[in-house]
Length: 478
Image (cartoon, rainbow, N blue to C red; front, side, top):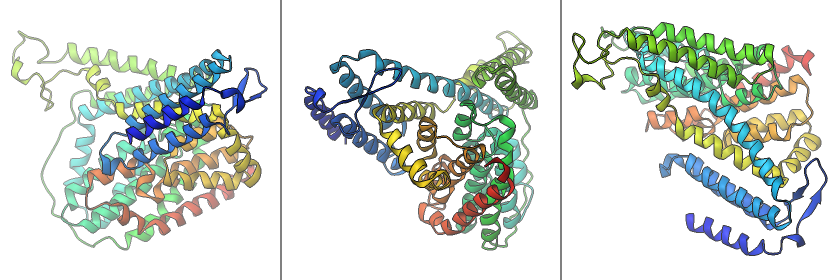
């Protein structure tokens, strides 16, 4: 595959020697070139498709998804820069890529803070304590199916759909690891619920976060999607629940306590969210600035935990240097930088690659063509419904970023519609969302692509029902 990419780049380089013959100048505040019918444009499309094929095949190749898109982003912008330099417009490409990097920087810093808080909660054993309580409660499989789905729907608006899905899947595996049917059905339910829950909150999914940061939908307006999102989960969950085995697993007596300060960390996270919302709504500042301020809350509280830690310094009673790296009980003092280091760096680098790849294709001119075809030719409703279908096949992040880059003229109701469809459309296939891909790895052999595909018609029914309900209850916004 790498050889093919090198050959494509080399061939493009040879053809770029005579770029004027194929380039057309388009008017604008910055002089730009229409490269859609040029070798650069075709090569960029091929490179992006090849890179994304590797991303979709991550389950089989075991190559981290950030690697191909990072390479693709670099190659695409090298070709764009070369074309512009050859046409004596050297700074237009520089301005464009800096704009894309600014988009990534805001998203990166926002997510880094959110991931740090989630990791801090995990280190304080909040999630493990919840998991143990559910495992040892002695619920029936059917009751657990509903509880894990409900928790996934309720937690994902704050903790993001991927983290929530992994937590709930751990509960399901701990109780039903000997019952593949229960695990499969529960994982499908969790994926649908987590994606649906993330669709009505700016913090629940990357796509909703991008829409909010763009200022297209205000924070409180997202909650108009609560009922449509709930319908999206409840319709397939109700049908699937009849197939869940009627078995009562044995209860247990295991107990895990939350580490000191764990609940304060939750409170600080909620305060950080409030700060980010206030920065955006009242001061018209980027939400990222509020999140970074909220990171200071955690860092200062972490300093307090470290200073008051009973086993925090050499020479204090009970100090044991051999236990310096243990993650049990309260042996190790809280260290915020360890939580920052444990952020999902592959995911963050993947976002960088996607934003620059899609941004490059937009700068070439392809997104303007797509916007004209979809939003002018098909109409906003059909186009936005198709965005959800595409999210199931590709991934909702590049699809939504492409829509935001196109920025078609739409009503608030239509922007809410595309937010809903991009968020929940990925549930129709196991590869359509980060939650589904992660659970296929976590419950390997029990939750599979074809096991999920069997229930796709039922999930699609929920998808259609959620769109209908959105038009019904939010009709005044269209």
